[in-house]
Image (cartoon, rainbow, N blue to C red; front, side, top):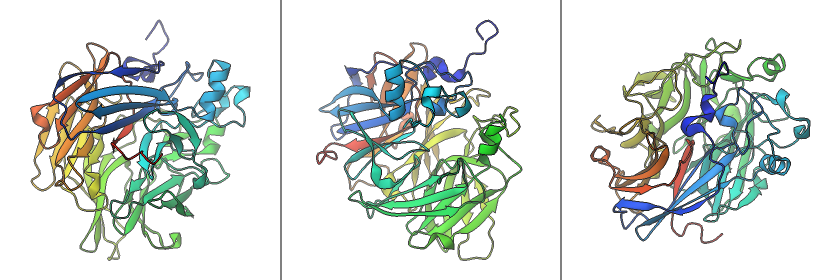
Length: 470
């Protein structure tokens, strides 16, 4: 605290914004693998001005893209803001106008204006580099230069941050929640974009209630929509209570539907209250669907519906099983790992199929009461059950680790892992490169940043040549 004023945890340490847009060549120690050629794109919140809401939430900061380009053993870095209409309006005024979740605090100049921040995930599909957020259409950035190109109008509305790209067809399968004219409605969209970038399908259905449905699951033939009791309520917000809140008295539902079927065929499975921000993967097996998810007992980072503080909770990897050929609508749940963690990734050439190798950021210190204390990179071999870890020294913390295959036809898991690390003692960042199947031996190369890369959410690897057509 400074005096009697609490310090917002999302504006301090490595959550604090870095407002310069820079270009650096990074100093490399070790050796960058010859086959590692392309760009690691990462994205996260980075408010360009001090927020007007004293209860500023990390999820609502302006998007900033960080690009690490690997070529000929060298690594260069570039970062740029995502220049959404909100960013442009506030930039012109020289101050914050939007309050994030609590729109009652918006400046009058913000009334009726676009509040999109495009800060959550960045995905390359059909030649487009798309910055994604919960509540707005995809926002295109230019590969390489990171110039802002604007919303992609083809989607006819919002698309959330975690589409899945089918490795067999090249289709991008996606969803959106809270769609329609009513704020925080229980309507959900299901969509498909072809490998060439044409939106082929967008169908709406009614969920059991409005849930902050951050991610979903896709298998070869099915799509799964988790409706979890981190709820949205416009009516609650109008009464001065949290617009997004944890309601543990509600059940968890997961809607299951064949990808080629009509939304009217959705079947709702259920279990007790829990929360999932990110699944690992899902697949079909013997008349059942199996899904590995990072499951919380209660949703962190948000209060309860009456405004009281939420309960701190960490996620662990659980397995959900859905008997799609049986009569029971219960979700079978089983814990499969006992290490606290988040931001799971796998070899995405196995999207929707059974998989062996998964990676995630972990917290071996079992930190209580502080957000995002991931001090370890973990690898889990689902075939052997063996887990290996690389624990960072001296209070250093990791971002989401991203897997890159050695080649298009390399065996599953054969490749590299890249992760941006905050060096707590020096208050700056490094980019680490690991042999993906031997993270325990530590990084094989390090690219040193001259300053911090603020904590962000997600990233993706884009090989050289993918953007040539654009």
